[in-house]
Length: 226
Image (cartoon, rainbow, N blue to C red):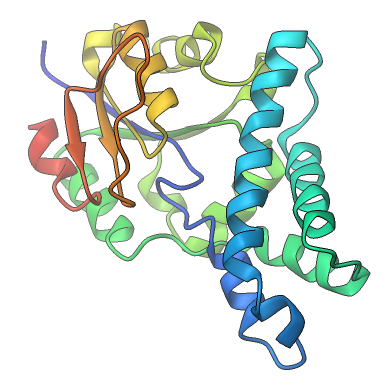
């Protein structure tokens, strides 16, 4: 079947999750943080994701913003940084994450070509709205879907069902795009046509399904959808 809807994961796919730590490290007076920011950023993201999986398995759902704060607290403590002002600044910057450079034009091209577009994210609505506004991509999206509406994190099937219900379509109608291999596997298992955006050149995850396409960025998504 032909693609009707293009759906994107948010964090790491459309929005650069390293931007908050990188931007904070460049600010005056952050020398101690600047020496460790890549390690902190990577550990923050790792724990953020791990906590979603563990909470989903245990049936202990909370909003993604709380998970994001918990992951940051772990990362800062792991490198021995106890700085309340830094923590506050990093969380502020996380609400203002920049989109990857190719994102606005890619979304605009999809809309010009008649596709419906959406975000499907673990993010809670407030943080997603802030990121979409900061990146200026709201007019190019038909929907911003949050797992908060179903009370469980990806890659549970209930999350992917939000797309077919919102757009009254079948999984075959959807091109799903994620930078997370585990998310791509979940989407393939649900029946979406799936793209893994492997910006970091990582090995493919050994999971139950593999994406149909692997890209290094989002530039050619409109061509794949056609």
